[in-house]
Image (cartoon, rainbow, N blue to C red; front, side, top):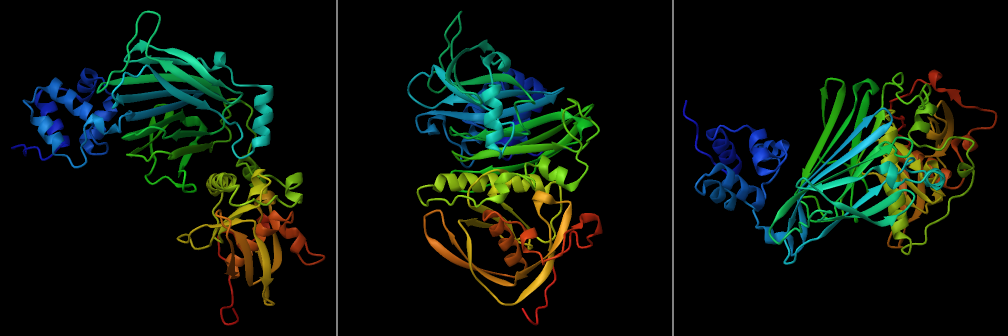
Length: 488
C-alpha cells in the first residue's frame, strides 16, 4: 500500500517521524517538548510554533521539507510576532489530589520575542477555600495563612533550578519572581530563544477549594489542563470561561475524561486564548462514602447539597435584609464580579439538580450583600437574565398560583400566588435605567429573585394559613409550570 504524500505540516511531521523510526515520545525527548504536544500537533489540535518547526526540521533532517510546510501553514508567524515581548508557546497545568493534598505542576514553554534578554518570570499562586463566600475565606486565611514553607515551591528552566524571589506575600495570594539563574550559573533567555519552565507547589484541601483557574496574562498559543483525582471519590468536573468584557459561560470545548488504574483524569485544552481570558475548572466528589479526609459531611438531603454548592441556607442573617444597590457605572467592576460569581454558583447548583422550570439565584444567597441576580429562563436556549438593582414597578391584576422551590430551603415546595405580568426597573452596568416586561414563568422566576434582594422569600408570599410541603410529596419536579394561554 502506497503512503499518500504529506499535504501539510502535521502530516509531514508524522511522515518524517515514522520514516526516521521515532516514536512520539522519542521525538519529544530529542526536541525538549512533552510527548502530548507532538500528538496534539500531528492531530491538528495545536498549531506548531516556529521554534517547534525549526527543532523538528533539525532533529528529523528533512532537507527543509518540514520548514517549507510550516511556512505554508495559514497563520504561521515567526517568533518576532510576539509584539516585542515574551510569549507562551505551550502552557500545560496538572493538578493532582491525593489524601487531602493538592499538587499543582506547571509546564510552560516561553519564547523571547523581544530584543533584550529576559532574566526573570512572574508567577502567581492564589487559593480560595470557600469560593463565593469571601467572609469565610477571609476568616480562614487570617487565622491560617498560606505559607511559603507549606507551599514548597520548586522551579526549573530546561532542568536547571531557578531562584524564587517573593514579590507579594499575602494570606491567600503569592507572587514570586522565578530567576533565570541559580547559585552555580546564569542562563538568561535571549531574543529568539525558547525555554521550558516548570514549577510546582502543594496546598492542603483545608486551604484550597474545589476549583482551579488558568488566567491568560501573556500572548499564548495553546493552553491545556489535566486534573487527576482518585477514582474512589467519584469525581465530576465542569468548567467556565470569563474575560474582561464578558460574564462566565461554559467552556467552549468539552472536558475529556479517562480512567487509569485508580485515578480518573480530566483533560481540557484550547488554542490561541485571548489576553485576559480566565478558564476555571470546578469539581465535586459524587461518592459520599469515600471520604478520604474524614471531614466532608454526607449530602443526604437536597438542602445539604445546596449548602455544599455554596448556597446560604434559611436562618442566615444575610437572607433577611435588603441587599445594597450598586452605584453604577462607578461600581461596574464590582457588579461584573458579582455576576461572574453567580454564574459559577449556578454551574455548581445545576450539577446537583435538574431545573425543568428554569432557575434563579440572588447574590445574597452566595453571601454577597449586593443587589444582583441571575435568572435562567425555562427555555434552555434563551439567554440568562442579569438583574442589577431591580425593582418591580408594576404588576398585572391577573395572578395564578404555582409551586416554587428555593435553593436556600430546598427540601420543601410552596404554593405561591404571583402576577402573570410584571414590569421591572433595573440598571445596566453603564448606569442606564431600563424597564423590562416579564410574563408567566419568567415573571415568577424574576419576582422570586427580586424578593430575595429585598430580604424576602416565597414563604412571605404564601396564602395565610398555608405551609410548604416536603419535596417528597411534590409531583412537579423536572416539569415546566403550565399556563392557560387563552387568558394569558
